[in-house]
Length: 200
Image (cartoon, rainbow, N blue to C red):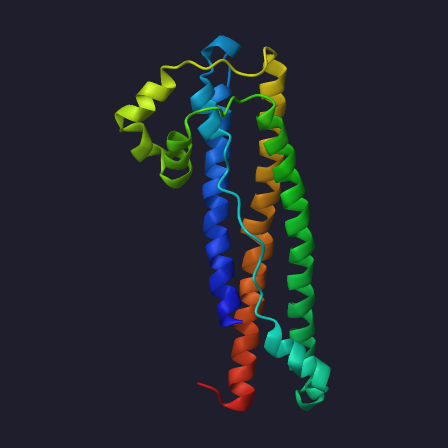
């Protein structure tokens, strides 16, 4: 549960970064016409950092369950363990919902943004923070190519923003409510186990 808590706190940080990038995307395209939107800038701003699946540490709990050893715990601890385990599995389902929404936004982006830049630049793009990338001459060279967008319909970009905002709403629910709730449950359960079994 301590490892789960550390992992969850990392996810919360990543979701905050994703949400900030979606805000940046919304602000960039707000009240612009198609000719005011630069392909390269939209390429960056429509790239949320995403987050990988949850890596719960379930092996010990699964061993306890399969061996029937849960009967050695008191009822309060069993109830809390079961609730904690059920909540992590609910979050796995939520993750699938989030990924589906992320994929919808990504698919829309691929209909709008021309990502056909030299491979060396794409590697820099994927591996460096945007602010530092903007400070190298190569970035300005690529930006000045003025690649046209793949769409001539501003509504396509509005749909992209809508899909990204829907993703932000999902991530806010995870970040502000569900994941902190799980951290509190884990902390309470750790405390119960320490008190019951005099653990350090």
